[in-house]
Amino acid sequence: ESAPVKVDNTPSWRPVLQAPQESGIGLSAEAYRRRHEISVIGANVPNPFVTFNSTCFPSEILRELHQAGFSAPTPIQAQSWPIALQNRDIIAVAKTGSGKTIGYLIPGFIHLKRLNNDVRMGPTVLVLSPTRELATQIHEEAVKFGKSSRISCACLYGGAPKGPQLRDIDRGVHVVVATPGRLNDILEMKRLHLDQVSYLVLDEADRMLDMGFEPQIRKIVKEIPTKRQTLMYTATWPKEVRKIASDLLVKPVQVNIGNVNELVANKSITQHVEVIPHMQKRRRLEQILRSNGPSKYIVFCSTKRMCDQLAGYLDGPFGASAIHGDKSQMERDKVLSDFRNGKSPILVATDVAARGLDIKDIRFVINYDFPTGVEDYVHRIGRTGRAGATGVAYTFFCDQDSKYASDLVKILVGADQEVPSELRDMASRGGYGGKSRRWASDSSYARDDYGPALDSYDQSR
Ligand code: ADP
Ligand code: MG
Figure 1: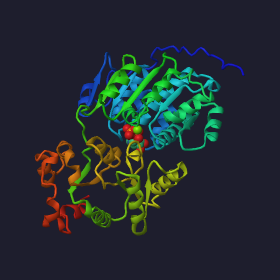
Figure 2 (figure 1 turned 30 degrees about the horizontal axis):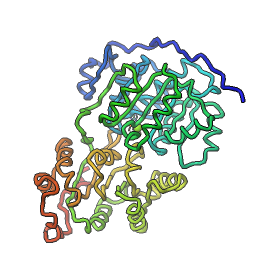
Figure 3 (figure 1 turned 90 degrees about the horizontal axis):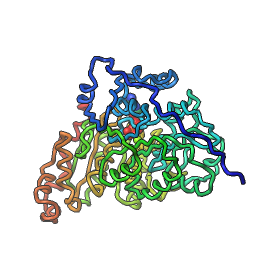
Figure 4 (figure 1 turned 45 degrees about the vertical axis):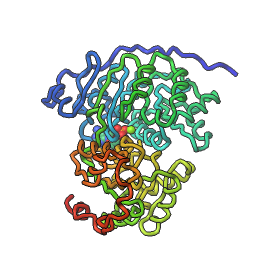
C-alpha cells in the first residue's frame, strides 16, 4: 500500500479581499452594528458587508443568493464574511436561525477555490456538526450554493451504511460535512485523510459538547494541520465552549449577535406558558391543535417512550410521527420528509431533534414536557420564528418543573412576553418550596377554557 502523496498545502495567507470602509447604504459600520446588536472583540475588525454587492463574492455565488430570494446578508453574515475572508479565526455566537450556515460556507468556497487543491488528496474544507439531520441540511446548502461554482461535497453521518458515503469521498470532494463519530470511524479505516484541510468549521459547538463529542473532536483536530483557519459557531457561550475555543483557535475575532451572556429568546415568537396539572396535558394539547387548525407543529417530550405514545395517539386524528434517537436512519428520513411535505404535520420529538433542524414554516412549538433547563427551552422554541417569520410556542409547566420557574420568568420578561400569575407565584415561592399538591384541589384548574387570549390569537395575525 502506498502512502498518500503529501502535497504542499501551505497557502499564501494574504487577504485578497478587503472590506470596504463605508457600508454603501449610508449607515456607518458602528451604526449598523448597534442597530443589529452586533458586538465584535478583536483587533482591526473589518466593517460589515451590509449588502451582497459589497461582498466581492464571485458572480456565481451572488446569483445563487439572488435566486434563493435573499435580499441582504443577515447580521452574522454581514460581520463574519469580511473577517473570514481575511483568513482569520472566528468565534461567532448567534442564536439559531440567524443564517450561520452560508455565513461559513461561502468564505469556505472562496478559500478552497483560491487554493485549488487536488481533491484526490482529500477535502480542503471540513464542517463538523452535532447531528445527522443538521449535517444533512448543511450539505444541502453546500450543494445548493456551491453547484454553480462546481464545488463537490460529501456528507458523513452515523446510522446509515458507510458504503455510499465512502464512494462519495473516493470520488474526491472539496467539502466534507460530518458528525464526529462517523468521521472518526472513517478516519480509522484510513479511507480519508485530513492533511489537506485548511478551513475547519465547528458548527453548533455548544451542542456537540453537550452531546459528549469533545474527545472525538479533539481526535479529529489532531489529524488536521495546525496551519489552518478555524471557525467556531455556537448559540451559547458557556465555559466548556470557551475552553475548547482557546485550545483550537488562534487569535480569533469574536462576533456576538445580541447579548450572549444572557440567554434570550427570539422576540418574534409568542410564548404561552400554561401552568397545568400533568393529568390534563393530553386533553389541553388536543384543544391547542384543534383551535389552531392545520399547520406544522413540533411537540417536545422528555422520553422516547412518551414520544412514541403521544405520536401514536395523535396520528389518527391529526397525522403525527415520532423522531428520537432509537429510530433508524431510514425511519428518521421518512419521518422528516413526511413532516416537511405536510403528510404528517405533527412531529413529536425529543431534544435530540431540537437543535439545528431547519424545517421551513413551523408555526407552532409545543413543550408537552418542560425540558431540563431554560437553555433547551430557548433552543426548542427557536424551531419556529426563523428568518423573520413569526411563531408561537405553548409550554406546559407542571409542579415538577417548579425549579425552573424563576429562570423561565426571566426568559419571558426578557422577550417582552406575558408571564402567567401562576408561574410568577411558583417563581416567588423559590421553586420546590410551595404547596405541591395545590392543583389537585384547585377548581380553577379544572376549567375548560384557557382564556380568550389563546383562541383569538390566530385571528390577530
Ligand atoms: P442557523 O445555522 O444560524 O440556525 P441557518 O443557516 O440554518 O441558520 O439559516 C436559517 C434560514 O435562513 C435558512 O432557511 C436559510 O436558508 C435562511 N437564510 C440564510 N441567509 C439568509 C439571508 N441572507 N436572507 C434570508 N434568509 C436567509
Ligand atoms: Mg445552523
